Length: 194
Image (spheres, rainbow, N blue to C red):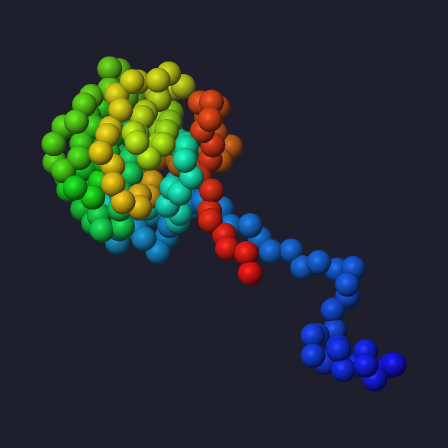
């Protein structure tokens, strides 16, 4: 009988059935492998500064997703959604059909066309929340809905952020400054079960 257990240990490894190996759950953050060459990402993938753009490390796959930025330092910046075909080395974004972006001046751009404007001025210290439900992208300013939807978003999209001229943005994918609207939640990373 002891020979059978030795054989099983050799085949399947000598594991303790009472010990379960924990794996670190991946979190959504700014993607240091998909950022502009002059972008600086600090604070554990939560702050972007320098010049250029960066994607999040996960696309939006769920039905209703929410994320936020806080404008730490004013300058030229933008936040929105983009496909991976979008260039991350030039700013501003919203200049091609691959990105849908709110710019620092409150204007919404896609394919180099202005698609709307927030009714309020953006300032240093503001928190901008973004909701996306695969039909429309909406913005909230300091927890107040701006009612300026962006429509027609197509393809697999990622949150995207850009900075220039001294702007610094803090990005929140969890631990939000404001509660997400009803039905919306933080971006989830898809995991396959083996």
